[in-house]
Image 1 (cartoon, helix red, strand yellow):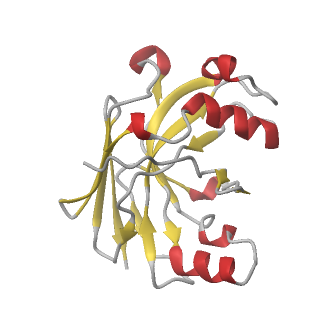
Image 2: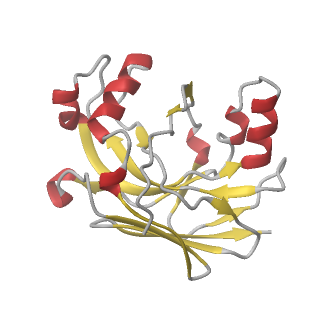
Length: 194
């Protein structure tokens, strides 16, 4: 298991802000196409936080009150496009925000699973473990992520936040099956189509 920390990067990523379009969300069990404009398509398994109560400038002490529940998400990335845009000094959102780039599991309400701050997070590709860590190693905790995002955006009910990925990100190819699991949240499985 990787003992390195990992951090938030869905909407707040390395100092850059991203919003995904609603057509980026893909349901569990789906087949997702290998996207255009890339030859280096990467997975990043992440905890999903769903917002039930919006707000701006939310205090850390109040942040958990804004959460509806949790799920599992894949932050699929056109890595070569992201890197090329970044090297050119251009915004690299196109590497992150595109059609069917965010497979998500069903959401689990806080009343059923409690608040999640630790537990395994694991991804396999065709049965081979690629990411294996613990949520307690996240650099920014969920309340801090909500607070930071609410300084940039008015959070709205129904918003989802991807919270960051552990070590082990890497490429996928058509035909690969990705299975992500997070303690208390079950599994998310998708297949990459050609």
